[in-house]
Length: 513
Length: 97
Image (cartoon, rainbow over all chains, first blue to last red; front, side, top):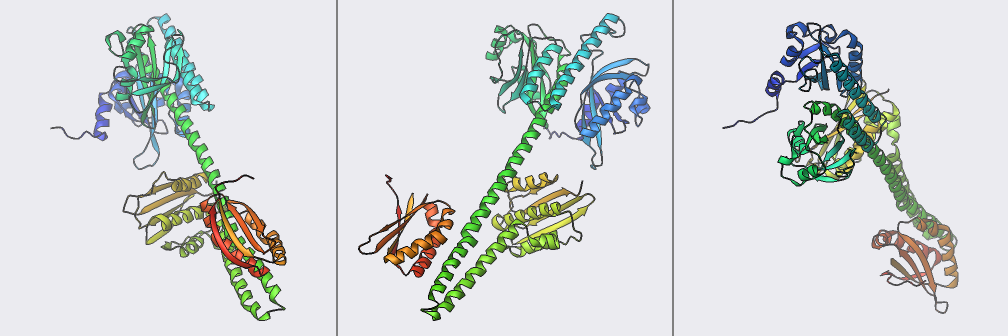
């Protein structure tokens, strides 16, 4: 019998206690909230001595306190991870060199956030004989030089990402820098394709072997390091390709590579790709840890490129929607009011021609003209309301939405909202309500809808709910259009629409600023 | 391409009045209509039989302009005094112009 495995609190606790990696959680003031066994072993501090205290009073060496403060400030300002290599001080006053990954984690009550950091000790990595850093000055200097080179490489790539270079350029730079830092002549960045394959998106090929060029799609199963990294979510290595029976393994050997190491790149929690290096002989055991620093940067590059792309397509959709609306407006004018006015002109012309010869027939013709004119006026009013309802300017958001609801074939209940808000905000909220209610009337098969406004500090939140059939497609153009509207005003919009249970559209718009 | 054919009976004076109305009221509106592709008027000067043919890009445009076409043709005929004999719909299958 096996029960269900849940990735929850218990697992987190076991993992934290058993891992060889250092796990430390900090608050925004740099106070230590969690300090695992590995931290105790590395520093000689007991948990009780450091918990609740500023890390700068214990494990952060005085000479790195300022850099530590900068990193904390950066992370809390941007919400981004910031991989670091730095020293921790031991209780005895020694120094441990540690490569850190970190990520902000929101508090359970969403009140602030904590920084979860995990570290791998570089000081005692298998490459180094025991005491190399503290004993042999030359070895120490070599190590420091190597780390400095690694830091510079990471910084160069990070700068490239910050300058919004294309992902392709970042991938090439990452390949080049990882090869340089890890002293290998072959490296590549791969993107997983959602099946058993991966595409080469960045490549450094100092030997000029010519295989695995950018754009090549290769088979990446568990016989490959990148396949294992994808399947396990952890760095993986192949020590000896000659022991593996696969086409890719044979290709690797043919071009002179015996071993490789790959580390996965996660974007939004999903294994997006990997960075891999290859060499003739087995790679040093710290290769995985050193690749990880680059993985964080690739992840950042991909995520920020995706965010830019989303923004661009949102802008394009807004422009397209605007164009479509103008076109529709022109059509409605032409086929509605304009056509009525053309008929009216012809009708009046007819009436004039009959005035002398057949005055009795003029009266009904003019009556027809008058009613045609009324229809034209009503159509023009309807169009004008669609452009910007006068009720919105004169009476405000809730009355305007109420007036709109009264014209729909669904019963719409609208909460009151006592205060007037900035014009742009009322307009954005009105159009979101208007489109959402139009969707309700058109698609939801609802009998009743409700619009409620909640004024909260700095934001206006409102909900449009209906009792219809639900199942609205959150990615459909209608909802994307609503979301674009909200986001263009700096807000957010969510749609919950379980089949058969109605739809709730929740929008939050910032006020002022 | 699709066509709507208005078959009329008109005197030369009525034809002249129709031309005036076309220029003043109908043409500016027609030119902005979706799928409008032009108009031809054919007259038999001996017997006054007249065809007014409007061309439309596709069947949808022909259909969506049907109601307006009927109404404006009727009002124009009332103004000029021409007799409307028939209205017919066609698909244009050959052009050599």
